[in-house]
Length: 315
Length: 224
Image (tube, each protein chain N blue to C red):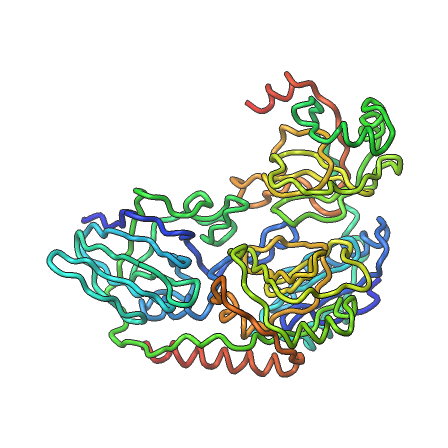
């Protein structure tokens, strides 16, 4: 039997194996992790006709360049990604959301994401990787998950197994949403901030700084003045929590966040806007919009229906 | 007990047990945490106990805030679950190479380092919570003569396994991490074992901890 694998010619900036993450370990300090942009993760597996939670390769800004060795495999890329397939005598421009064949010695060059951060690579097969606490998701801080908890490195091998014959022939028409307002529910410490600060928070724009990764987004903008206490007794956090640090700047917790924190929480990004939030690249601006719990729940149902609708189009 | 339940975003419950930090309130939090873990409420995907709050995250595809709130309020609460904390002994080497902030503490607390260590090693500590980074235990309470504020500028990298003090608490840096606590020593023990796939944490909320001093040669022996 032919061995199928990728050779990593260029690892990319922050390329990791991810699935939908770990549950029920916050209390020992282990966050969810998992694919940052859930919808693009789910769609990648749907197009490959894989199980819903099959591990994928997630890359950020600049992706990896991989050489395929073996018989053949189909792959698809989701997100807003600029990529090429380098075949024997030609270079093919890649199109996202459809299955593309790779044959022996073909190279896949995931050049960059366009005005977004994360992209996903799925194959109609499984990667031969390790799982930790029921998930392959790499958490580089705790050094857990596939690939010994590390990002991809140059020259390493990624073994591919269980290649299936069934995959979607359809190309999915999906346009990643343009970045607009990010909707936020007020947090438990909303009243720690001055009247002006509360107004500024929902009126002004904040820039996404370079100090942004899978753990969190650091924002820069008008100073959010705290009138009570810049510290609280440390307590739990969830994905999307916006804390205001002592210097008056917001930080938004993302999938690899520390499980507890000691800054006041001004708000939490709604679940339906999380995929959009993580895709905002450094240098862009965010505007927060206040929303109540009931509306957030309704919007989430619509988000989930839309995801299911997209999945059904791959069948 | 719980003073108030509110929502934290659209997919979590924020249970408030008050603002004080003490063992009594924290034991309540931990009891509640263990009860909810046992009750297996559908849709619960994470429960985070801390000093005086408990956050319950849930899957919006399965449940919602109102449902979970009702279920938590109607929970058949068993009091006896919590009192099963283990007692764990942690060796610490206080060699100058590891006790990065002992000089700062001598000045700040106006105590000789021998006194600082005597006070530190003579008490038994209680684990309020674990987290921030994987497995990091937050322990207390220190003798009140050892209360010190955080470093003015946090370290970019605190070495793995360092023991740190701040205010009434001490902790163990289970991984190299940024941090602002006053470092007084280092343990050769792995507090979080990332090869252990079932229970990677050595210390859990509710456990009691005592530290004992070891020499540099004992430390090196244990490290090998």
